[in-house]
Length: 110
Length: 122
Image (cartoon, rainbow over all chains, first blue to last red; front, side):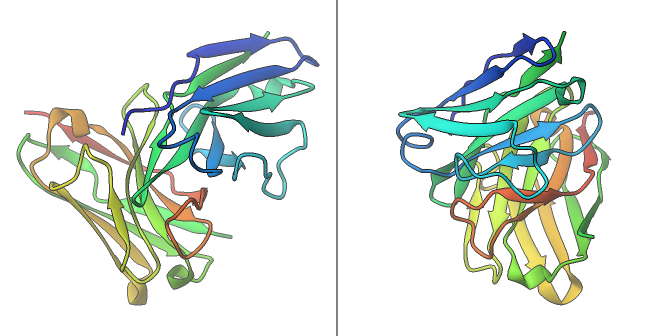
C-alpha cells in the first residue's frame, strides 16, 4: 500500500490553469476508475471535488476537472481563483477493500 | 445537513490503547459505508479503515492491520475505532468519512467530520 505520488507544490496566476498529477501503479490508479480528489483548507476537513476519475459532485464548479491515463490521474483547475489556494489530495481504490492517498499538493495562487 | 462528530482522542503512551467514536446525524447511517482517515500534523491524508453498511466487509491499511479494529452500531448511528498497541507514528488527526454508497469498493468519501487528535507519546 505505497502512497500515490503527487508534486509537493504547484502554483499559477489568477485566470490560468494548473494541473496536479497523481501517479500510482497498476494495482491502484491503473486498475480502477475509482480516483477521487479532495480539497483541504488549513485546519479544515477535506472536501470531495472529483470522484470516479472525472465526475463532479453537485456544487463543485466546472472549473475543476479530472482525467486519467495509465497509472497517472490528473486534476485540472481552469480559471484559477484566489479561493482555490488549498491543499489537494488524490485517492485511489486499491483492491481488497482498501484505499490509498497521495502525499498532497499545495496550490498557491500567485 | 450531514454531520459527523468524532471524539475520544487525546494523549496516550506508546503501547497503550484508545477507542475513537464518531456519531453521525443528517442521513440514514445504515445506508452507507463509513471510514476512518488520518492525517499526521503537516502531512497528507492516510486511509486507515473502512466498513460497509452491515459490517460484513471491512478493510484495513497495512500500517494498522492487527492493531486497530473498526466497528459500527447502526442503532446508535455510531462508528468506532479500537486502537491497540499504539505507536508514535499513529499520532494524527483522525477523521471519520462517509462513503458515497453502502459498499466499500471504490466509493469516495463525500462527507467528513472535523477530526479528533490522537497523540502517542511518553
